[in-house]
Image (cartoon, rainbow, N blue to C red; front, side):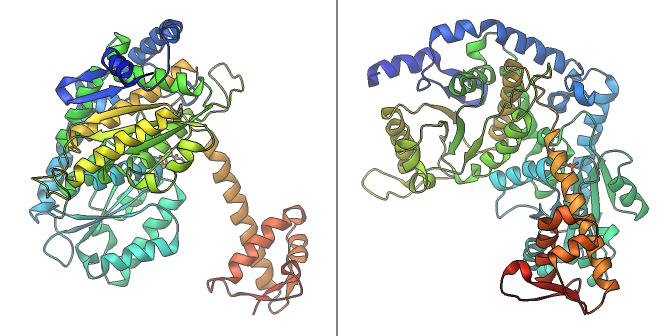
Length: 529
Ligand SMILES: O=P(O)(O)OC[C@H]1O[C@](O)(CO)[C@@H](O)[C@@H]1O
């Protein structure tokens, strides 16, 4: 298509939300009118399903749960008054708690004010807060924010070192919907020990966000933590950023949580539009379907041309892949659905993997995110009549054109700035696009049965480790090979696991396991002195 024809296609299909200064351009996606016609009734059904979801249907049938993240920014739409009240009260509590804390009326044990924030969580209980903090944070924030989002001991040491002397002024926020996630529990215990190491009462510096009566909830109450905020059953982790999970850390940081909510609310309004080509979430879901043949045949590459949106692709990776990556459809048929998401930021990626995008394996479609506002205030000229921001736009448009020339499809989202309102709108847009797409391909977007398998298997590994240690301690000084040890603990078939566990044990000082080298790694002998 010539540049002139593309301009006409751009004008024909541009989907705009004037109140948000937002637009979605799908002119470089090569769908046809026939495709739109073919998708008309499936889309009608998907929008019906979304309406039912918002009205409180059990849209997560496997877990028999309602799906309520849209109510968070419009509590009046919640199906029961009590739910709406809970949302409003929690938001008021978030504001109150942050004000008290900022004013020093809620103060740490030995310092005047809380100045730092350590958030402990994983998956949906970390990614949203991380995205918001990175996208909107500035050096003038009310509190500096840090994260434990893994059970990596060195990762936690790194963060604790950065906190250094500020630990007595640090509020720790432990976030877990289930309240039983091991990575988060481990992070909490490590943080607790760090406070104790400074003779500080952890509870006086800790707040939980969790489901009622979860393990974490009980632990927080038993140890007199400062507060607990609710995480409701009808909110999924990956759509929890506009609940207390994302709002509390953001508000503590001093960010505009009302702006986040209003942007999401406005986008929700736009994405309820039954006029499909004017509904950006519906258009986006259609484009995913078109590009990936409704089967995840192509990956989604996200290219936000803004450093502040760098974590957006990481955030969307969970939102999209945990929602859409499913073995079975709603009728129990094996479909192995999904959409792989990756990306970082432009123009940096131009110097990394864009080479492959243009010339290599043709297995993706791109989403460019354009941000109109360059920075606060004016920019210097790096060349005649050209700023650094002009270059950024130039690279976006240039890369988009270069991909198009090679038949690579792309769509472009444009937002006015990276404000709380724009970020709230982007989050809401993708939440609904995921829900609509899931309906189009007949899967449940709101459960995650696949992640349990890995957790269970990890439990088996740790059980084998406990048996090995108990055996080695009972046979002090006797060095044995992995095969001998596997047989001794009744795990002969699990010898590879035994070998891997022994290698790790011997590499660390914690359990007193040593390794005597042999001719091959597999003949190495392990013992406890
Ligand atoms: O908030 P929780 O219950 O600790 O769960 C954390 C994450 O773990 C998952 O359940 C996957 O294991 C995600 O869906 C969730 O966001």
